[in-house]
Length: 498
Image (tube, rainbow, N blue to C red; front, side):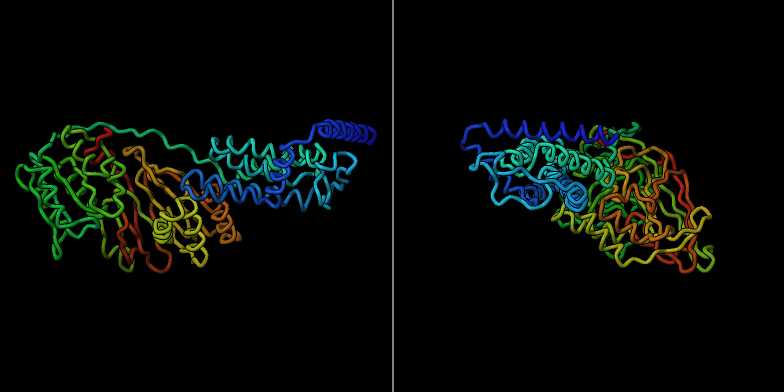
């Protein structure tokens, strides 16, 4: 075995010297300066840090790719410099192997095996490519140039560069496990429902919440211009929103119910529409308009398009039965859930992420928000379907959300009949450290402290102090028990995507 290893090592040395001799025969030219400068620019990762800085200026995939590339580069550098260079000591090429005008000066003093420049170049480029292939393809020639420059300038033997590149590629592939690819969201799918066309507002009653996030004095005027034949009921301060919406829905001759307001107002309108067997026209009047976005009515133009043609779709609704009082039976609140409910730190996490998102983009904003939120968090103890858990977050989505991590954003299907349940628990040993590591590396979705479940119903019970349950962003304090179920195809909603 030793003889075979020595023979293989000898052949590698012979091949290294043959390649270096071939390189040394190249005539002097401008390419020498280019490669020397490229090699110098990549020293200590300066070139790749600069590239990452440029990519980070663009939100979305470029920024995500930059973060992943730097993560891979850091791992490759650590493995190369702290591990392989210690285990595989090797003398670098000598001045007699290359022309003086080409030889790097001063020559590095560390082990020649493997090439750290090549490892960093391969790691960063492949790390970027795994997230955003076009950017990786653009960086590949530069990475190849850096790797070759180490041979051209006499800093490394060719086999050093090959091993370094392999280490870098391995680091990038390994960090892919830390930063897994998000499963692509399925195509938007709608189940068509019958609804009357109300192009100018014929038979349409609209409840307008004047306390909504985007209401202005011009809102009512604009709605009357768009729907001149509609009945518009303005809800002002001091009025009960649910009662006012019920009055609009019950008005004689009403064939469709419209609502202007945020998700809380839309939820009350959904309950009224179901009770009166009316289709619902959602007009985006809130701050975030999550439900309006899901039915593609995020603008008045989209809502108007659906209203004019009578395009509508079926959507499920969530039902929440929340028990309050000493035993959780003194007061029962029956709530309609359009989007999500949560217990624990999730509302704080979302608020922080959305506040940081315009400046940092979604991935980095989620990372910073997660570190801030969980850094000083105290877990909540409760029973979930009769099983005791300590957790930081319980999230219940009405319908399957994507991506499948702690930053759910889109809901392509409105009537899939499931509750999307996501928990971040504190049951496991070193749970806080594992959670912070998962947040730092972007792997919460695959961490053992995160649990993604789908079910038709779920029940919870407070263990000790009562809970604050947030349903569609509206907090409900003093909750001791809650049961979530799905009402299949309970509501018809106008949607241009049907």
